[in-house]
Structures are given as C-alpha cells and as structure tokens.
Image (cartoon, rainbow, N blue to C red; front, side, top):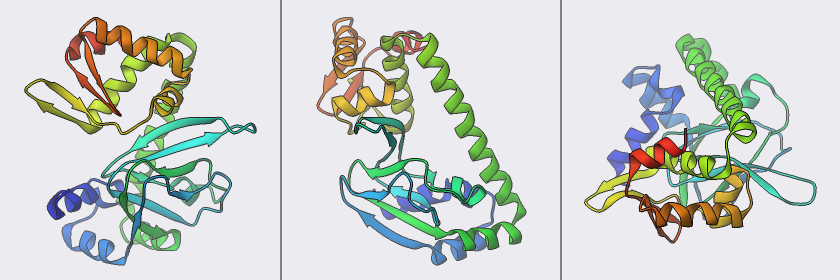
Length: 229
C-alpha cells in the first residue's frame, strides 16, 4: 500500500471518523506504530487488555481455541479495521487471539488515552458503541447461519463478504486475495476442511469461481451471492 492508502485506511477507523482533521492528526501522532510478521500473535485469548489497535495494512485474524487446540475463526481484519476495543468497556481478559495472516502494520492506543479522547470528543463514544453493536449483530448472524444455513451456503457467504473487503475487480473476474489456508477458511465457516473443499469444487464446476492458492476469482457474483443468502 502507498502512504496515501495507509492514511486513508487509518481515517476509516471508528475512533477517527468522528473527529476533525486537526484532532485526527494529533491522535495519529500519539499512537504507537507496530509492525508484525506473518504468523505473529499480537495478543492471546485470556491476556489482559490494555490497548486497542487499528490496522494500517495487511490482514489479521481473530480466533478462539478449544481445550484440545482446535481453532475457530471469528473474523478477518484488514486496513481500517479496529480491534481490542472490547476491553475498553469491559476491562476483563481478551476474548480472542489476534494473529497476523500476512506481514502487517498496526497502530496501538493505550486505553487511558482512549478515555481522554472520549472525554474530549464525546462523539467518538458513539462510534465505538456503533462498532460494538455491529460486532454483536455479526455474532448473532453467524450463530443463525450455523443453525439454519448449510455448509455450501456459509462458504458462499464467506467468499462474498471477503470479496467486499479484499476484492479487486479485473477483466477476468473479482479477485479475492483472502490469504487464508484451506483449514483457516474452514474454521471461518465452522466446518471441516473436506466439506469446504467439496463446496468450493462444486462452485468451480458450476463456473461461479476459479480457485487459486489462498485466493478465489469470483466469476458469477450474482449466483454465488444468492447461494450465500
């Protein structure tokens, strides 16, 4: 990403959208820049939460682990996304593990700085609450899908959602470079890798997608979208 793209990504984060340019520049200067490499853990489930983060570039995954080591992916984050803010309102341990999917750049802000920001700009609190409401709505949607939607439907919906975040339209289709392994994609939809691979192969046979390593080219967005409803 160019410097301009990175700055635009930061400006999309909820804590920035509610403040003016001067305040945004001051906030940006007070945040700590962090570079993480692919596979690096930013924080683990159960850790004390003392900072929130904004993604400048790259991709991260939020997931939880069972006692036997199995992982369940909650979401994939990209430029402009914010995470770690839950402990601002509920100062308990982290509820998920954050891991870099690819080399990424982050900005970190200590929670006492966030409190000062909210007091100075009350509208920031509304943006943070809106973000938490979106997370709750998404959690309810995922739970509903697990109960009512079949695996192919969940796979189709996941691809569509990833395309909205990371897709690039080209002459041969919508390129979705999700950077996830087959196992991670399966964890994202709550199914086995074999079942997810079968669904993807079926979509490819139908001419809806073309499969690439850690990527998908969507050839028929309309049909794939309908399958994911």
